Length: 87
Ligand SMILES: [Zn+2]
Image 1 (spheres, rainbow, N blue to C red):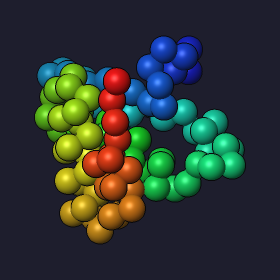
Image 2: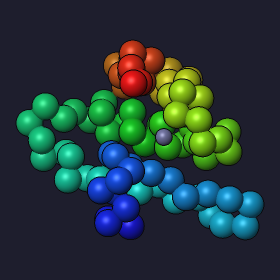
Image 3: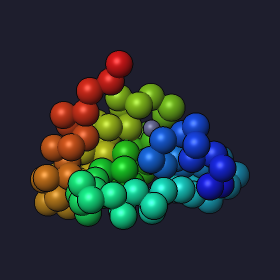
Image 4: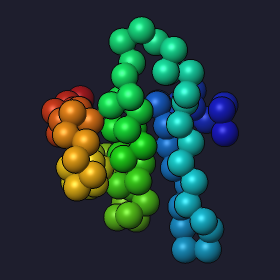
């Protein structure tokens, strides 16, 4: 699982019809000086977005993740996802 983080960014998720969903988060990021708890929440909510929507779309996962965070009143973390730019 840790090896997969080399190619899959800050985290990733595993889900499917016959498996319990799993989110893998690279907690080493939390030792970076600029990293905040809001960044951690944003990554986890993004992955939860993939699972809830059963979607591989990064944009849809960001949108669903931001929705989840706003519902939990985690507006700073939601803003991180809402403002995320993709290449
Ligand atoms: Zn994603």
